[in-house]
Length: 193
Image 1 (cartoon, rainbow, N blue to C red):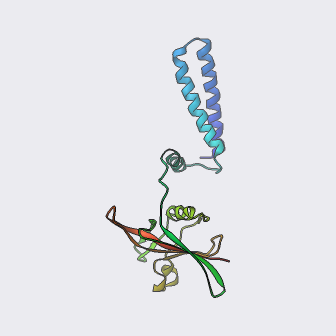
Image 2: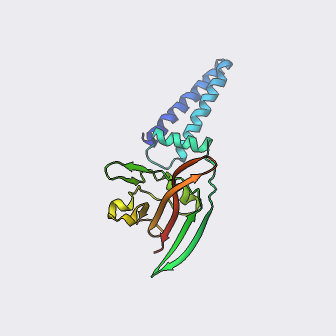
Image 3: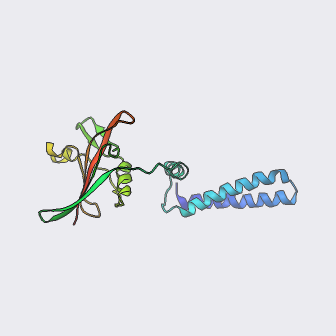
């Protein structure tokens, strides 16, 4: 739904609510005053949220995600990692490698090609944000599905990353506390431009 249209609708409802409150006070129907005030406050909060929204369109999934992030924030991850900076040939790189259990990686298995692809970049962006790095914008396929090389299994690459080509290596991690195994990020490497 268009945010501008939604703002106009909420503004009209706020105006009607103000008229209702005035009517309640004039007719001395104070039993309805609390109800009218609560509706006015709710509509005001929605209007305030819409004013702060930067996007042009808004879906129910966006609203749900915003409410979840506001009222039920996720615990900040606490991963043990090492940072290595170096030179390989003419290129500088930064490499972050995680001790097990590393950050979970959300993957989708493609039954046609038998490769794992990153369709939802949320798990990647969460770790990049944790490392104070820019986020990625697009989903990627497993590099081996593109190059055909078995050496590129478990690798994912973003060529258009702002700091230089970004490569993520995945592996299988085991969380002994929860007795579970999962796909995780083993290392993140950025080749600086």
